[in-house]
Length: 616
Image 1 (cartoon, rainbow, N blue to C red):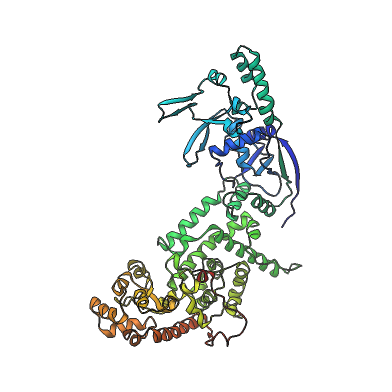
Image 2 (cartoon, rainbow, N blue to C red; image 1 turned 60 degrees about the horizontal axis):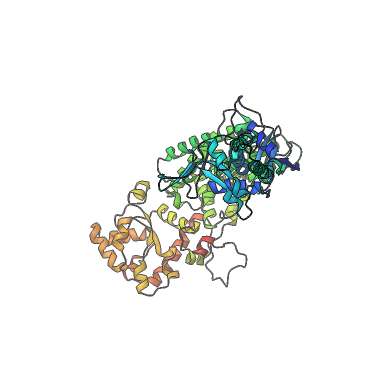
């Protein structure tokens, strides 16, 4: 992380607003639009008029390493063409823009009311109320519609009309957009009252007690020097930008790249990539539809740093080789040329990742055990290119994938694992030792007893494995291919129905686990209903025109003992199927699962339960 060079001072509000209007102070393009509502505007004006502190602003000197694309403050016009800013406003956009719109421009202000409905307002200070110490200053700040006529009863009865200068003078309503340009208004005001002594005295009291607060107001400014690096700038921005949604690395890179190459719009590039990924699979809700740009850039970072490391080693450069990394700081350090170099190949890597998931019967984004695991998977597939189609390679990829799922290894901070995955899996495929993820993976027998939530990665994994290993629908006997999965609305359902289990007083923690669940079509689940297995199996045979032997074969494809189901033997069914599912998982992860009790097991906790299961 680079050091932060900064200076702290105070600047007159008038000067800051003029610099914003003139383009000397601009916004980095990643800053979101101005969003303050009518009440917020009035409150801010009231605070300044009382010389109350409203917080500091933070700026960044331009001309350094960070070249964010700039844009003018809302309402500021580029009358003489584009202006090169001297500083970029990192914090304080909403306050500075609000004050600029309400005090420096003569145009109506577009804002929203408390119901978030769009409104247009001109703002005034009720001079009489402002000088009345018994009145809250907020009540003295008035917003009127664009017509400057306030009405009630659906516009039928006028309450206040300030549509002329004379009306402003007559009602002693000072327009806020004259705060820093008040001379003409003041001259005409006293002239309107024929230079009456009390009105002249009234004006000067208003100027000294209210307007002067704006003219003398000094706002604290923290200015970051131009030598501050991009990672430090982004980190500082997030520390001070406590309101609203936190900016992610993609949004910051969008602004950085736009400042490095004229006409390059990363957001547009990403929209095109995402559309191509969706079109490649041609399913509305396939796993790649939920791919985030930060996922894509994490994979870019892996490829970029992997390439740098290999180059360092190949050229035998002095010093330690660069680490493979995909942390936030690494992502923010990806140069534009590196994005261009790796993005096309990575796009193909993600398409292959989508095909890999389909080969594992994961068709729907909600069935993806870990969205995070797609990052190293896509990076690995990018480097493998056409080799990923080799049977031996696909077997190793599947083993690594399911070890990550059933080892539940991708649920927390996983950037370090991503980096090791890329190195380890590629080396393993080329004859090296097992990857760390394969070595780390462990599964306990009793874990099956706690898996009740479809939010659990391992729960989703069992669902996919059953379909991969040939499970067929109880009723139709159809395998769960892509077409069947969506056409028949396949989901995971209870084998011993929930209603039947409750009637038998079977505890929820026994009947609601993945052991008592399996993938079934919507129609089959409707036939099953809430009756006993012995009853619904008869209905399934009649409904589908199947023999008992046909139904039994379908049951067996789900690792279900037909005899135990036909006899409604819940306890023995659970014992039998637990062992069957354990064997299925063992095959997927390529290692034995310990069958001992919790008291017998090694003390090292290799298999914590997912937080989702614990919560639900």
